[in-house]
Image 1 (cartoon, helix red, strand yellow):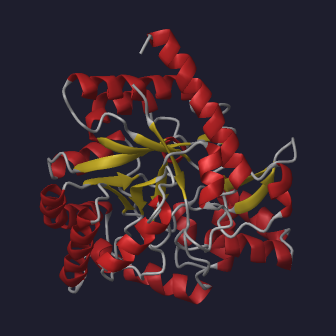
Image 2: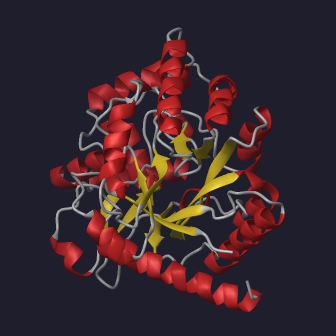
Amino acid sequence: MSLTQCWRWYGPIDIVRLADIRQAGAVGIVHALHHIPTGEVWPKDDILSRKKIIEGEKTATGLKWQVIESLNVHESIKQGRSDRDSFIENYIDSLINIGDAGIKTVCYNFMPILDWTRTNLSYQLQNGAIALKYDAIALAAFDMFILQRKNAELDYSTELKNKAKSFYDKLTTDEADKLCSAILQGVPGSKENLRIEDFQELLLQYEGISKKQLQKNLLYFLERVIPTAEKVGIKMCCHPDDPPFSLFGIPRIVSNEVDLKYLIDGVPSSSNGITFCTGSLAPDPSNNLVSIIKNLGSNIHFVHLRNIKRDSIWGFYESDHLNGDVDMPSVYMALLKESQNRKEKGRDDFEIPFRPDHGHQILDDINKKMPFHGYSAIGRLKGLAELRGLELGLKKSLEL
């Protein structure tokens, strides 16, 4: 069996062109209508118009709009506010329009306020490549001394607080600005960073919302949208928290196998599943990625393959796809076996879509200004080529 090789594309504003993606060898496009504000309905005409650009209106491009990432969930839904039902209705209308357009996989997340969070967007590796990095010391310094969140110090150990204070005292104005920009980058696909004042206000909206309440809000959302997803043939897949632990005093609820099982079991359906993201789950060494595939594999509808290297107990950086703390050969083998399992059972979704998640800035891309950090062309091309070679070797060994 094979996994479907995909590539995230940010649309006409992306410096990586569809022609470049075809040359990279990907066949599926992972995309979203980023120009539509979160909470509004995706018009069917807009979806079809973008699909024609991707797949070619007159001449086939060889590409297919395979996955939507992301149909974002409004903060009112996450917080369980009184107006959430109107945003859920909009979400349902979007799903109907997406299904009518023939796109059958929708990735979303339930991370409060921020999407994936890093403290350094231009971390230089020993070979000169540029990677993304998360450092708990830097984040604590931002939280306590720049953001000045109320009672933030209660969330950190004495050792971490001391390290964060020392880190902060040595920050130059330029370094502090870069730290703020990295953390407050907002939602991927947007070029707008949150302001400190806006972030402080958003954090206040989450006061009193426990992990249990946030989980209830997730199930409330799923109970209402999954029936429509079933009706229009869409597989919904929730992306794990990145990184997989609480930030800024707000709980995160999709961080480990227990959390993933909770959302799957909460609304049992073939349309309710997960995005299996190796780079999001791996920063927590207690997450056994192969075990998650074996136990929850039937509900994996989309895969992000990325590797990380934990450089200390305080953080991690994004490493080469085949070189890090993720045992990528074992993970890929487990995914191939899941694919084979599905075909033997007669499922039509056995070719699980995946994409190389993020990539280093290398070679000529180092000289380019990247509008979307982690999404350079050459680094992802390298990652996809490595993963393609890994798949070929594993399939030969399995005689698939």
